[in-house]
Image 1 (tube, each protein chain N blue to C red):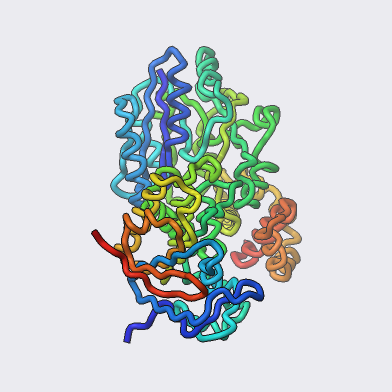
Image 2: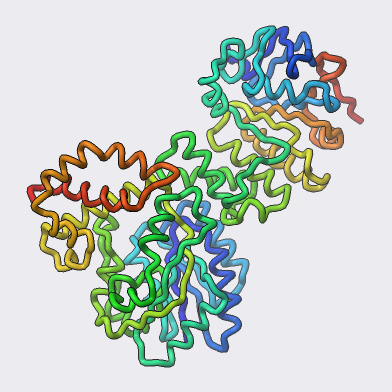
Length: 227
Length: 297
């Protein structure tokens, strides 16, 4: 039986002490691309944070890439994050080093030793996002769209079972956003599972996938109208 | 009148080539840039090949070796392809520090020198991820002009020097498996030190190894140095760690014991965020003693 990459049952999501989402039932299978939409404050980000272990899951049950969110220990969080690729709105690249070193830093931290394997892996993920010619650029020399591509490449380094993208186009202009979405689409087409939080409806119309909405303290699937 | 030769292995050549083109174009000279890829991984080959093709300049060529031939053979291949009478060798992972880098070399050509040696510097931007390599470079490899003039042969770097083609054809780079090491020293030992003109013309060395990779490479180099010493190879006399080894030879049993007791502690320091270069120097000599008692030297 193929397992769900992500499964939440009757989960309650808190933002500090406030309950922001209740009765969350969510299943994502391998190879799916799913949007998570909703207004600011609707609980999107808190849900994402719960999924990567930044907030504890206190009520309900949940599992993600083989980890049980109910019994997740502090010490297991780094291992969970190795199986997830996380992309943030603000890229979070290290500005004091170049693109190549940004990615090498991650591989080193996750125990990669062989220098030639490190180089091939880095160039492989940079090729996937179309940044293989800019490995020598310092992070601050890149445009926003380029930084986000590098951040996506970074998320791909450890062959994640699931990519969590938290408003990856939130800081980008529309044309650049489409470029970044094309990259995510290609990654999805190569077999990766992606959950992307966004409030950019134009993107959803242009790249239609299964869409879940946070509203009024609940999470439900919305069916897109097609012309 | 100048052929710039760049051996390439797993490195993006664009920043260096761009820099060179803009500098060479300002000189009123004939020039070419020849690169030879020593069987890098596919992505680098593609990136570099696409970039060189996009320049659409028949003075700039990238050759692709069909198999990994090693640094010496790759350099000799480039020498055989060079057209002009002067050859500037640069490693792919360096970048000129100053915008008069090329003109500094050109100025020296008019004199009767046969080899003109520039120098290597370490860039602060590269410090963080490769602390041990960077610190070692800063403290031990950035030599003063005076010191380099005193011991030119040991301080010329294959990564940045100019040579008359005639001379390079007569005295090619040694072609040896990588593990034998000391390729630059072997190469420059072929020449008379009076023919080497040492100048201050730096490039930044950018492609720094990670701490653990550098430590392993260093351990290999120490093992090679010991091997050369045991074989009574004349090259061994040029290697400073061998000189130190000879001086403390009578203590080697004690030092080997100290190595076995302290190497974990030292390695922890060397791989940390604040490695000590003094510890690094001590570590090397202790390690040589440790290997030495094993090899009954």
